[in-house]
Image (cartoon, rainbow over all chains, first blue to last red; front, side, top):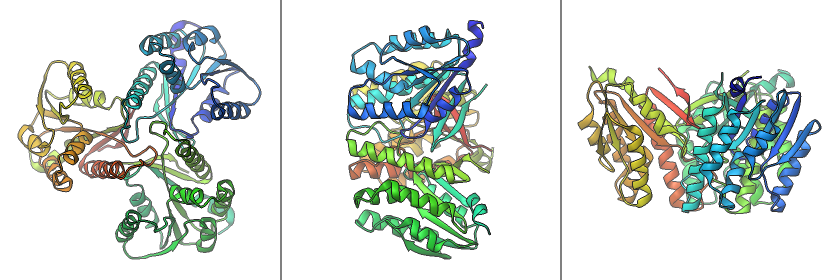
Length: 176
Length: 176
Length: 176
């Protein structure tokens, strides 16, 4: 499989909270023989630990799991292989981790985009759409919202498939 | 009309605040001979009373109205009849009432889903999509958002038609 | 060109923050020989000045710019001409200015709609969808959200094309 053809295998699944975006992304990943779940969440609190456990229980057998709260591009480079689908869940949590740990967001994003362009197998990425509510009061929330929106646009540009999920139902924004 | 065929008659209309979702749902209901408006709002404050009055004025003649701030499944069972369309407006307000009155949300949701599956005539339900803004600061708002998203997914799964409305314009997410 | 035919030339581009809606609207405007950028933002703070400068840099040559933080209908009447495309960016900021300066929103909206119906050439308008997050805590934010939603509906009704943009990708809500 050439590097050039792999560009066709990046899929972005966008949606709101509890929109069913992760379940839809998992269904896409299940079409592939092997699956690697790339978790970006840090196990920092009870609420997040419960969510991770619930996601894990729903996925069931046939998955290996790697954790990449910050080094996402590295995880994609390392794990990507033909006939193996990576499921990155989710980009917005990863972005929050970068900001929390004061990493350079632009640099991390460019590394991510490069890893997607070079991926040897299919990659499905989940992301939150967070820009459709009222303008947040505080400047930090506004800045995060802007960064999340720009990240989604950048990943959508390298993806061959982009879906928007609402109430568990996908709407195609981009298809080959 | 058999119980099994009635499953095809559930429609979910999703949208944001002032998206025109209620007006679109009413237009769908108007295709039917008789209409029952199932209001879930409680008349607890001035703002809500004004909204109820505005909705009522817009609907005009040819509707009967029942109020079901909590006992929604019971209202659907009682009012559902062939050639009569129920318009439930809206699920998200009903969910808020359940939480406010400390009812068991899971139990109420299961009863609602059962009433929809058993409905003798068409039911159109309106719901808010609330998960597309920035993550709320407080845990209660986050939990409500999660519950609303899961409720929308569950109702969408039993519906044969699901629409997302923005700026008064419907986008089909699911159609028979 | 008759007044009646020009109604076909109004386009509304809806989207969230950092959704790529302005870039998409600019691409639509570029199909026309001449372009007038109708900026509604007031240069009141650093953050907004930076955004205006970034938008200006991205648009590049071939645009003239007028500022219309309040007198939007007047600007459309004055600048509208055959073969010249007006790009109004954005309606939601204009609405915020009206509220901030305590102008009558209904009157301004009716004047805007009249100016769109009478436009001599194409007009592309950008607007934020702000109603898809959790219900805001304070009444002013709720009222603004409602007004923004109603304004979007009213403009969508006179438009011949309406798009919803997410992650830089347009979804047609209305097309001729």
